[in-house]
Length: 338
Ligand code: FAD
Ligand code: EPU
Image (tube, rainbow, N blue to C red; front, side, top):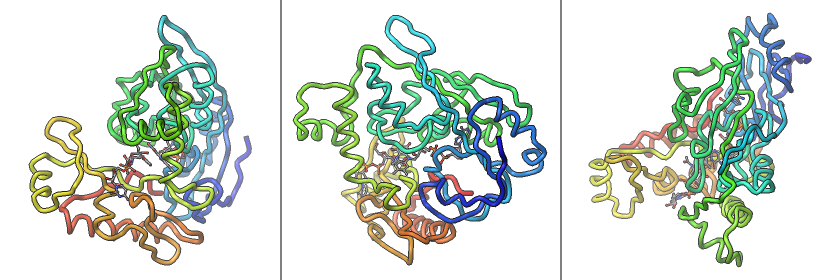
């Protein structure tokens, strides 16, 4: 455990934005995390817990302590008649867990292939894609109280998962460091292929027999066709959440904009794709200096290189203002601002 000073955070977030951390440390075990948390630097400074940095926008130098979690390890915690409970350290790369679960013959994570980031961050916003969210396969998590260093186990219910939401973004914001997550995976596969283009892509790939491997490959292909690779173009995935609006508001909008897509989520609530709203407001492919709106997916803001967090934030605010003016819908950010 070695706390470094004045470290560039550019390599540690997928937006690739230059910003400096006053203090920076990597922790590879619960013991070293506890040691760091009890250090006077931690108690006298703001803390930022970092995983893969794929859902963060740095808008300033961070005058506190960045704790980057690199706790590894994937193991079988338990088994019952139908399920295998797989426990993974917070620093495990999400996609590596997905690949390993498929190799182990387990089903549940295949639709979540290729989501960037770490296992530890996955419960923060209940990551989701292609008809599955981690709440569908989550069993429990282990977290360390930042103040006391005590370990607490959170059950599914205690995490209050919602669409891109959990208790850790609200009541318990900045209170816990997640150190491990256990997933309840199925030994008998339950394939979920109704969402989006999965079926069409499976057919196009010549996969006539369903398997977790085939679904994973299809999801990877769809994602690579739409989403920019952060290694080539700085971004943090969807910048905004898809808004949910009351069905009456949706019907009013539909009479004015007959093509507006919408999906019933909870009764009386319609989810509208923010990408459509942003594209129709004229932003798709827009570029302003070093930052812009991705040309293949309007929900993704990008840094062409050398852009600042302030520039991305200013562009996001312009996009929000124009969508609000045209459709009366307030977009809220999915990305965490620092
Ligand atoms: P970070 O960006 O490091 O952190 C995110 C937040 O969680 C921060 O507030 C941080 O302080 C906190 N945090 C991180 N680790 C911990 C921990 N161990 N304990 C406590 N707090 C912690 N998301 C989806 O849901 N679905 C997608 O399909 C999807 N696609 C994406 C595609 C691309 C190209 C990119 C760049 C991003 C995408 N995302 C998607 C967003 C992102 O991958 C997820 O939010 C991911 O879970 C973030 O993980 P991370 O380790 O990078 O988190
Ligand atoms: N659309 C457009 N123009 C665009 C982009 C999208 O019109 O430029 C419309 C189309 O109607 C399309 C619909 O939006 O059918 C949905 O688009 P897409 O399937 O690309 O999904 P999304 O709603 O933009 C969400 C998640 C993604 C996740 C995919 C697949 C959110 C905020 N985003 O995107 O998650 O991978 O579905 O499930 O819910 C992320 O959170 O970072 C992320 C990438």
